[in-house]
Image (cartoon, rainbow, N blue to C red; front, side, top):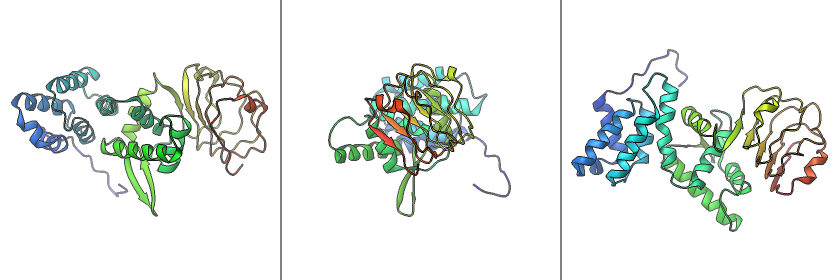
Length: 293
């Protein structure tokens, strides 16, 4: 918050946490059925007094009237962490419930894609939707139809407290809270697997052993990568985001030999003067972005 003195913010007391939870989930809902209220109180306690977790989980369960769904949510929270010994880990495990409540693969995949940007980065809404379209995350239809679907998904992710809306100079941006981003990266450490090292000061690509065959997305945008010295074996890779690096040499001619599934390639602001020969073999490529090269 750019203050002159750091102030430790304590976790909420039980009654404060319960009041905040009721506000987010709907007070009339939780008070309408004694059995549901009892489970809801246990769910609120599992959030450990952490406001971000309370808000996200409360919104995820808003308008949920099935006691079975509430019981499932409580069980998921109880088994996801052994206690709040590490704040980041504990919050991530609890926020996963908001992710699972998105219901369908489309919204989940669109949300996870946001974690390919650097932490704290303002993501241009139109740019994000374009990536979703090129990745074929929004299904078929006209460009206008897919744009509308993308805008609807963004509204849903904001409503679920998984994205924050920022408007600057009339331009709409979205942003991932750091803890929400950590949660997304935790999910993508398994499936879909990604390499996400955006804005981390990288001066070279991750070593070959990190480029596993099941990696689906890779983002090294906004680093200082100067040279690419090998060809990764990533046949399932669909998006490779390399924009805003400072390549001192053009990309190796055989770099894309083992990336036949690639759909999206962003080489903007990398300083390259030519494209590698292997690019012509990428038959699934939907978007090649080379702005300011």
